[in-house]
Image (cartoon, rainbow, N blue to C red; front, side):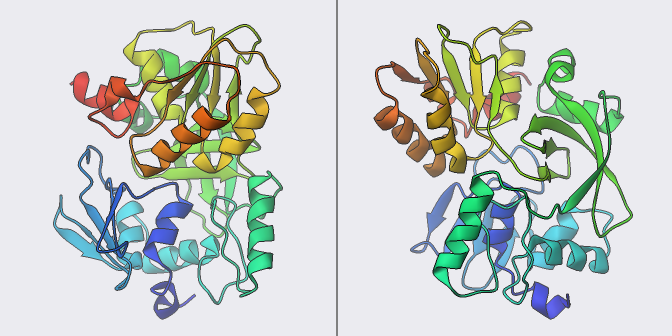
Length: 314
């Protein structure tokens, strides 16, 4: 892939592919505002993407540019050639025929709408696609940078050790490897570190923990909020049922799973953004004969539970 081609990839679609969603829109939807993906603590979204110009700007650090500049910020040690290889692997270039296993919104070369929808349906149904990453090792958490990252996110290390693994992985077209915290998900891991947020594996799915009839069910949008919840309340022996969506696109799958069990109550710990609000309404409207409680008031001044605990536990 050439730089000229890479710069045509829509920045908002790239961010969507790594799980970064806009928190608000302006200028009739032509400006998308995000919590910055290149730094922590951006509780008042100050990272703007201009859809028409396909440029980004982070007002917190007064820096911006095109999609190549953005990936260079995310991958601090990457070269331009590294960045071009990463962007080519996403399959988001309109001249590309590849697809990425980590994207929830699939883009293909074909202009046929039905074909695009079919590819997207297969992805959400959990069918395997070509893996953009290769997992090299899975172990307990020992990497100092990852331990520091957990401390920054106010996640108790003991709780993290219970639910997470340390994974070493690399993009399949590169030699350089990376470490991340891995939360088991489908046939892979939801992966997080100070420089990476995405999915590493063949397909993603719901994460189901202790699903048992006769218990209450808590639904979290992401695993970091679940771990933040346990850490905040110092709960090292959580017994109730938990579903972690890993993507709001999997809410229908969650509904199907809920129908297989008898839960006494459902608690929603979803993000305070447009996607979270629509998902709350979806569950309230579609969960039958079970009381549903929205717990977002616990962190009403923040995007999510983990953002609240980071501020509250300083």
